Length: 291
Ligand code: SIN
Image 1: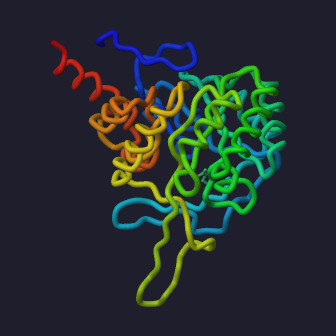
Image 2: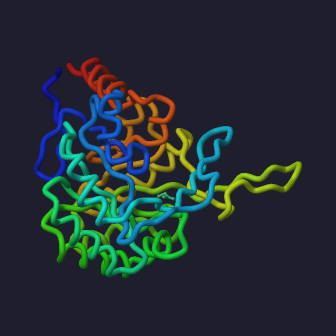
């Protein structure tokens, strides 16, 4: 170990790598599978006020260079999360950040109010950017005034820090980031997936029921680097990078662009041990460049 640390919300971590929402459940389900090795924290699948069945299958489609997802925020609802899931997640060896979504501005605060009953969450990630739902989602994240109001409502309800997960798909990411900061967010996540679609040119068939889904891929890295860079120029709060990470070099590039911590998501499906591989790779590369 090099003694290097990264910090978020007054806590020091020996890794800059966080598992992205939607790719690792609530973390504890994967505890014995190597997913958590080398990671600083886990971000849960989105939690909403009421249970959601999500979108009809298929929800994931593999494309030549990445994945399209259209899960539709499937989750058992916050009551179940607080009473059944979070007690199990208390066994996690790393902090859990709970991703929160809502159909109305008030719903975000109502979900957080329920989550506050649990001692488990380290913080929250406020998801105003899901590309796969009709209510809330991207439309919220694209409007700076909505982002500010949601952040303020959450801040008034929460005793814990929170990051607002922004959309790359509509509006200005820097204006939304500034609005989150103004509303009291303790970080912004840059960013959610990019809208994408695939169509079978022979049959005209589009596999996803909503036609478009959220695209994630190592190829997105330069798009994320650009957004992290411009967001870091605009705000004073930490920026959590998310999108395109598959190599230790990618983590270092996003940190160099200004990110405080870096999320890995889609790459976990290919390499469940990504957390340790990325963290160890980062430490080795930093050793190599140290004088
Ligand atoms: C989904 O549940 O459809 C994905 C969540 C997200 O991208 O925010």
